[in-house]
Picture 1: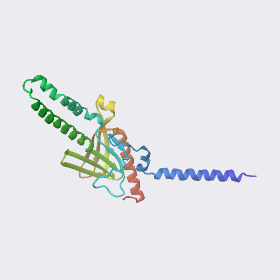
Picture 2 (picture 1 turned 60 degrees about the vertical axis):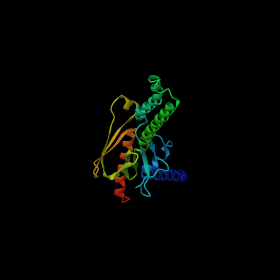
Picture 3 (picture 1 turned 45 degrees about the vertical axis):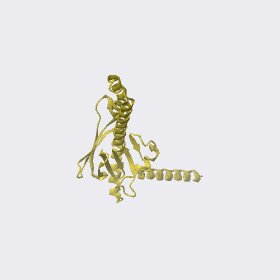
Picture 4 (picture 1 turned 90 degrees about the horizontal axis):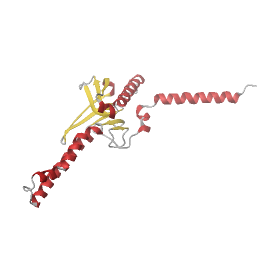
Length: 223
């Protein structure tokens, strides 16, 4: 007598595996990266950032990546700021008689440390807000040449023709950062993400988004 129940169990299991396989195939890049979400807002590479919006973002558009220059690129101005902290002491040692008055010393200290704070604050803001954003629909590059001026450029994912990475030198290889070059068919021919962390991972995700966009076109699901 044939074991009907075992046959049914096998069919049920096969149906579940097929359903699971279809679900995995239709799972978007944004959904796949949800479990890898970066919680540190000061990270050089933020995956699926929470509560991040930008001015031209569409309602259903999902932010996949936020990239800024690697933290190690700040080392020059950080060292300069540390040196500036010892500036007044050095001046008083070289010119002890010229700044003998407590009032002059206090005034010099105040002005100098205000300048130091302004220097550090401006450099930090430029590093923090000069970012490149990749969504499930486009690539956005946001630059702040100064505190009062910003430059925003973007291109659709389906306009990307080629992506490449340039990593050269011992320091870049050691800390795993480099430049990502994106060639497009849009008005702006090239986008450059300078000195970003994990550039090869960024390229991999970009290629996955390009493939996903092509699949959406075939299935007629383009927004």
